[in-house]
Length: 630
Image 1 (tube, helix red, strand yellow):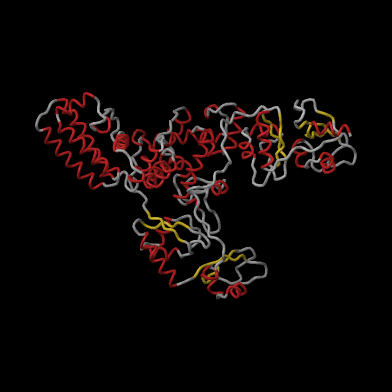
Image 2 (cartoon, helix red, strand yellow; image 1 turned 180 degrees about the horizontal axis):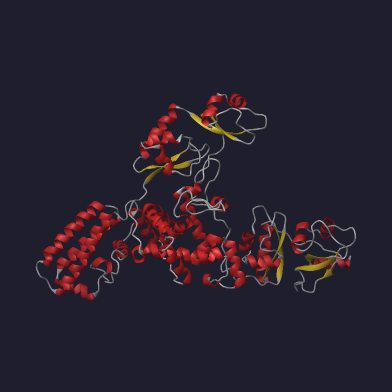
């Protein structure tokens, strides 16, 4: 992709605008000739050497942001010498102002090079930012901080009794921001969201909550798998900083698209989107600060904002700016099980370093039937891959998993796989042969040709499937319809999926079907969807395509006066239970599922009906008339 020079200058100008705190001077595009005000143009006409110096500053800045720090440093030092030479000539005061400005910028640039502030991510960030501008989707760099009583409480806490912990968390941001921030930028999110991981786990790779959320982004296993993370006996990618950050970024993007508000998205990350959507619909507001949510969630967003406020300006709150010690590594793909010790030898590092870089591996080797990403020290990737390739050619060995069955012994298992019992015991670190039990999983070393023919899974966290068919907005636009359709729940359906499919809210869906917040749905259950007449024809067809059906004939029942007025719409009738009747027999009578009857009559006892008990049954009006005429 080719970019015009003026776009590059614009990006560099934007990036440098934050270089010096409190800098209020506005010089467009670093003094470029085509971007300055009229008065500055006059100065450049009077003093052509200033234009030459401005162009040198452009070149030095561009070299830095494109990753060529050596050229940038040399150009900046040469520029300072040229500025000193021009200042020695005692030019006009207006020219002196420009010289002072360029001197400040050049020294700021040299300071940033010395600090190596953007080492390892300057070029990716620059390319991502240019691509973002080219796509007209510039990432909003900042999340607005709301300073209120709760936010100030957390700021005071972090400055007081929580200071020790927060200082340690800040140090970890200096280590991990070069990994996390480029991923957030790549997904199109503000870099500020790194502080969500700070308050969730303190950026610990092995943090685990009492609710069994795990990793730096504190994923529950279900949500983690939904966003492409693999969790099994061998691996837990929730503790992989790259994979989990991509998954968290995709989840946050989905939540922001759903709620169109960062406070609501952050609240949903903590409490779940269903609970937040339920609160919005019941309380009729999309203002996070006015919602009545669980106490933990109400304090969660202020805690994030307090951490973000301190992270943006640590010195203001009495903290030291974190030292720059970026975590650096190469990522290689491994398709065959390798001992982590062998990978360490191939990479020329220690086993403890490999384990530290790859805490997501739960066993002593990489998993079989899986393509996995392994982090090795920076610069060792290519050499490690070549060494592993030679190792693979010399020793064609792999592993399969075996679940111990009742009555099996290690000797029997070894005979089945044509390996020695001692080798199985060594691989699985078993001291005594009798120390195995039914259900245990053993790792069996076999020849590569004996591996199972299963297709190896590949990492999918970068582009997971969306969790919902479609996100409908706004959440408060519940249909106030005059017609209904019957929807039969399919496998893998959830209430939120169904609500999104029919462009309504969870609260309305629950209200229409008398479902409490704790209610679950199962395949085969029937749900009623109300909608406007104009939408009914199209959505009825959609319902049929998704497993729905039109309501069958319903004889011998009295009409409910509160049922819909439309002659062809499903109508609620009341059935009086007779002696000997059961839910099954009543379901056959009206040709509806027992689960549907129970859904319509929440107080009905599943196991016991009483004569005279009233049940609501939904049927088609025209079919009822046909039944009455029989």
